Length: 294
Image (cartoon, rainbow, N blue to C red; front, top):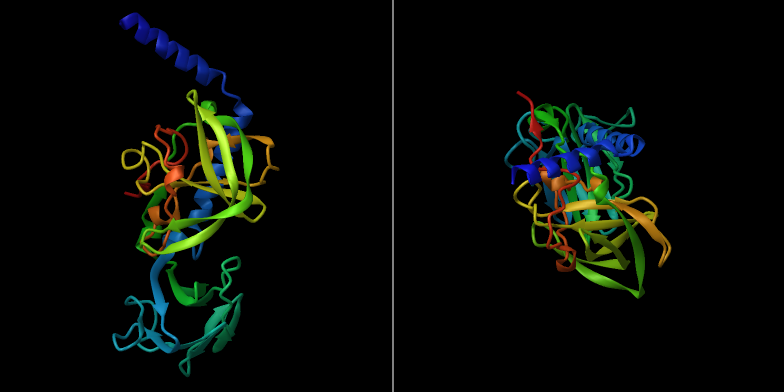
């Protein structure tokens, strides 16, 4: 038994020794960028509130009589109003107050609700933007002096393992079909799925449905490490350039990462569809929980 254990250790050490240094560095550089993106102003670590607004006029500020009550320290008692009409969001501040957009002070603004370009406005340490989802208008509030942000010590990752960089192919659905995606607060949305990625891991074949996002593929998955060493609800994987149907490519599970919900309670992350729950351990990519300072 001792000899077999020594042989296994030697084999693992040899595998690590043969890891391509350029590949390892590329993954580590990508992880460093992912860490910095998380720490940025108005990033996931700064979120301090999520408010679904009603049609018509919504008052907002730190006072309890407002429709939208910001946490203490994030502005005066009454900051202004946000008027919601279909396709139109208008912010009007109280006299004497101003907000800043791209360095320009303003007292009122028609807000964009695009998910692609977040229309952030700032008032001191606080900032907010508005998104529209299925006819609902949601204000996201950021506190750039958040204790979650200041106490963040970094993401935690498995070591880079080339065994988790595997040949795969993209198989298109003809036609593309819809999949119901549930998020962490039980909201359901029907998302277009152009196809799935197929690959072998540890000798077994897996198929994961992939959503189209920009020019790439977005995969929501969960495996048997969930709730032990990784985030229980699931993790994400983004393929930057979507392959053509039937085209082979390298799927890099070392770049599996945690959703925003792993870092903030004010997000609504999608959960993996049942076909993307893998009955195996994917000991690659991001772990959970993150590091804390102190």
